[in-house]
Image 1 (cartoon, helix red, strand yellow):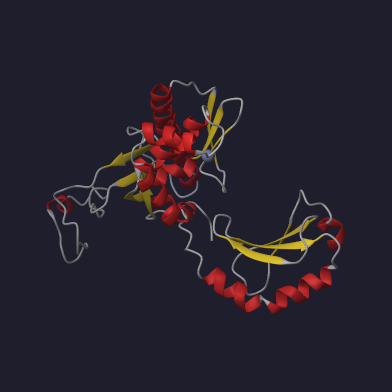
Image 2: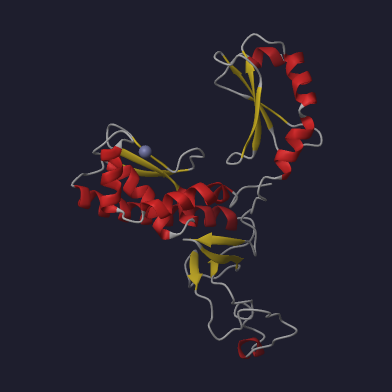
Length: 278
Ligand SMILES: [Zn+2]
């Protein structure tokens, strides 16, 4: 049974290992000459690639020999931040606290409240630093900590995470669409279609037919980073490669490109923490 399933490379087999905090994916590969084990930050999964012809028992032995290494790698994975009430997420690179505020009709489904400058930013807590706004006990939303801006989501914990995810995706699409057209105008091209997806391996892609796809997770990154990814994909509408001419085009429309590339290299994997479940 196990072996049969493993022979279909299109559908990797996912296993849960005792004492290991993330799923293990087994993949058969025709090209693989030996076992390879890696931990994917973006998918929060261990991936074991097996040569086509080896027996599954050998995979078990290989895994047993590398179990300590695997556990150490998994311990080093950044903690996921699920969309729970009170979670702190970066929105356009700025920390925001998620609040599921119950049934509030007049505000719309999701809205952002800026941090209240009157509230102390540091060391504030309900007991030690009461403030004016708190004197009105019925206004409980306002008495919450305002040191960081909040993303308020109407509804409770049940529908909140879904609503928040939809909203973030829509914000990402709006920002990416705006910046895509900006760079397209600069470079004299027109994208055919822009879409936003949950792609785990790339921040953006551009097809030869002119369709540009982005990862919605770019909404968590600072704005210049999202802007760079848009510039990068738009430049592919003129140069379908990563040669010197391509990079000249990116720099022409996005002078800060090096800063953004460095940011992505250093922090990109972090963007996958948010909304992930543990
Ligand atoms: Zn590219």
